[in-house]
Image (cartoon, rainbow, N blue to C red; front, side):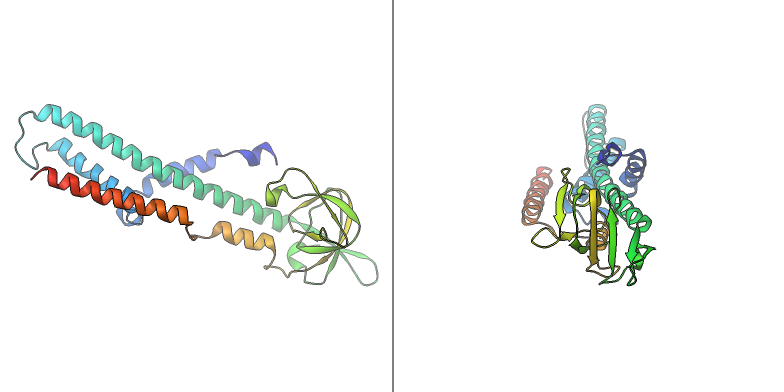
Length: 242
């Protein structure tokens, strides 16, 4: 993969993440994450106490308490912003990856083999199941398919992340190829096995663009633990004043 693709945060993603850090402060959005919502509420309360240190009762030293509340408010605010920033970066990288995959899919041409043996250049989106295409070294495989003739090294890093090329040949367990991968050497004659919109690349784009996903068991357990600790924390804090 190129160095450009290896960047964790591009200037555009960073800019979008900064904007997202503040737009996600909306309480309606923050309520989806109970732990961070409690932190945001705590930040708002300490902000009020920074201006009105005696809001919840008489105090003997308002100046020191005001400074303390300002420090706590700043820490809580930075915590919420950092959490929103991290989430925005993840969303930005997902959108950038989806855009890159779409561009690869849109710009890919295919050399379709006609019944009379001639070749016709078409867009990869125009291929249908059963079409036969010829792909040579340096060209992108236009769609998911099965090798029916030839042997070649295929770079699948764009799909799998594996940098080492793999060998694909007709027959056996290594005849399947994925659209969006690049042939490094030699050539392959491929029979397309999926219609446009149903390829692995299409499913990958839909997965990246998906607004929601199922949480793993570890994420569910961690979220339950954090919510439980937050509830205990609130009970302890609320009972301190009485």
